[in-house]
Image (cartoon, one colour):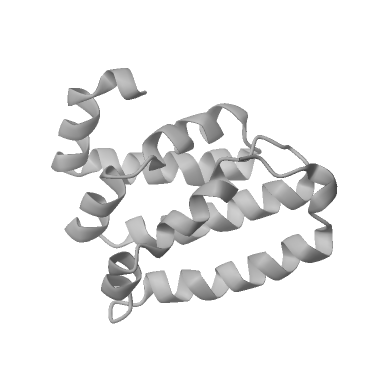
Length: 132
């Protein structure tokens, strides 16, 4: 599911990132966050998190997508934790922590840390270590 590096121009990456910045506002706001989760919109970000290309346009997409997830976990909201634990966010973040840019590693680490600080998150990761 990795896009070809030639297919993503800096201009196209920039336009997508501008849209993702709007999604980050929706994810951050207490009135729209529940609707954002109910519509399963965070799942649309996963292909951007799943790219392994280190080219700048891809890294920019990865970092901006992480920013949206980071905005979700920044607020201690059990529904966010429950939603994310039922996705592939932890394995994706662990891979970014190994291979991403310094900034992406930092945001991915923050996301994993916030999930582990939640009791349900810690139990989930400890019960299913083979996934990671």
